[in-house]
Picture 1 (cartoon, one colour):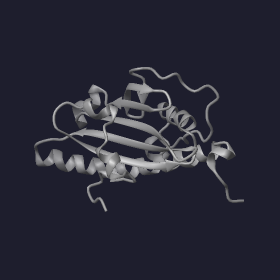
Picture 2 (cartoon, rainbow, N blue to C red):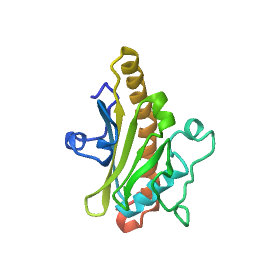
Picture 3 (cartoon, rainbow, N blue to C red):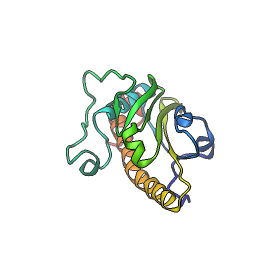
Amino acid sequence: MDVSGRVWGATRAEQSASYPCDLLVPGRSEGWTRAVDIAAPPGLVFRWLRQLTIAPYSYDWIGFRGRKSPRVLLPAPSVLSLGQPFLVFEIAGFTTDVHITGVLPEALAGRHGHMAVSYTLRPHGATGCRLVVKVVAETGATTGRRLRRRLLAWGDLVMMRKQLLTLKELSEGSAPPSAAGPRAE
C-alpha cells in the first residue's frame, strides 16, 4: 500500500512510464500517478475528459462551488486549444483520444509551486481503455514545502479518485452496449 499519497490504481509500469507532463515542471519534482480501467472506448472517454474544461467531476461541493458537474455529454463538445482553462490548469498540449496535458498558471505556480498534469488514455481489452493520470509537482528544499506538498498529494488523491471513478461511471453508462460489455439487469 502506498502511504505517500502518490499512487492510486496505477501499475509499476504506469508509474515509471513517460507522460507529456514530465518535462513541463522545471527543477526537482515528484510524480503522482492515478489510474482506472474503463469499459468504454477511448474516443468516448476522451469526450468526457474534454468536459473537464467546464466541470471537475469530483466532489462538486468543494471543487465546483456546489454546482453539479453535467451527467450527460454535451452535444457540441468544446474545441480544445492551448492556454484554455482545464480544471485549475491551462492546456499545454493534447492529442485527440490520447491525452490532455495542462500546466498550473504562473499566478498559482507562484503560490503553490509549478505543477503539470496529463490525462492519458490507452486501449485496454477488446473495447475498453485505461485512464492514467500523472501529476508532476515541484518539490521544495524546505521542511515546510515538503509537508505542504505531501498534504497536497493526499488532497489530490482524494479528489482525483472520486473524479476518475465518476468519469468511469459516466463513460461506461454512455457507452454502446457492445462496448461496455454485459450489464446487470
